Length: 171
Ligand SMILES: [Zn+2]
Ligand SMILES: [Zn+2]
Image (spheres, rainbow, N blue to C red):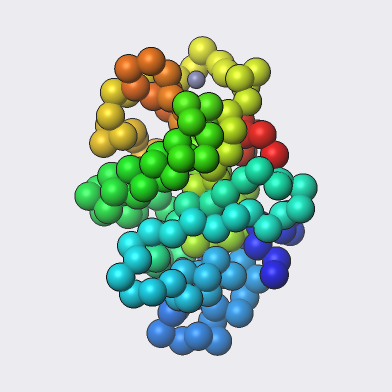
């Protein structure tokens, strides 16, 4: 199992196709293979991060595949809203109101299949550059950066403009 290994990769070139299982054997496509193992009725699923250096981390993923780098902004809006509700629900269940969710930018992702990192929010990571939204339906999907989200009274902070975002989460 080599998920999320720090090897350099350009996931935008991924050519994985679930109809051709041999294409899912690429190292960058191992989360696509995990998605294929899920029951057909499961729209989203959770995986424990298997990196031993990140023992407190989870991943939220859709079963659905998207082309190439599986960019969040390419997911249809209605599905994206459901994905956020699923991920926030899982994050709350695990970390109460101390959670953070991080989506890394395309240039630093090592797995093509769409995935959010879920963990305990690192308070010291807070910055003044954020959008405040009241509802997950208002979380943007930038096409040029990752984002990280954490709860605040009455809504959420959405921090955009960065590629490496999972540093906002406790390992
Ligand atoms: Zn995939
Ligand atoms: Zn914030």
